[in-house]
Length: 210
Image (cartoon, rainbow, N blue to C red; front, side):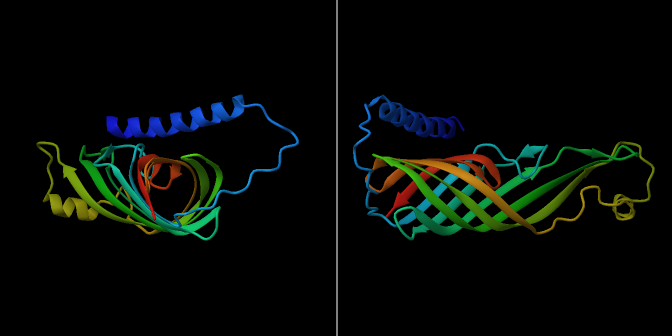
């Protein structure tokens, strides 16, 4: 996890450094407007790990939020593509009036369409933002802990007669906005990070452009 935070911080610090350098340069009010730099690589494939899960609040994250995307730039600024994410979390204990503890582990998969636009391109740094519309599907598994000495006919019958405190997993429409930064570290290879990316509020990873 330290590596992920390091990548995330590196990308942000690099962006800030380029912005500071640009602001320190003198500006000529009569200079012609900047031309849009031609984009050589139109296809973008990215993969990363979410830093902070938010889709399920409370409980324990069973693993990192794995995320990926495939995009194609229609022109120098605008790209369309697909996004994917997966997250697995276990809830805090629900304790009923008999002292039975219940936990639910939910595996959430997201698939969605992305629309992004690049609004800063300066050297190896690119700053972009956009929206993602998709579907979240969930699978749930349950675990129960019964207190010693509880007088019941059987655990199975007890659970059948008790309402599910977590509700049934369901498919949900998900819409989210995101802001990202990409920094080229090798030809066609970029470090990238995003905030507001669906199943996590922040993620970091690698990007390949071709």
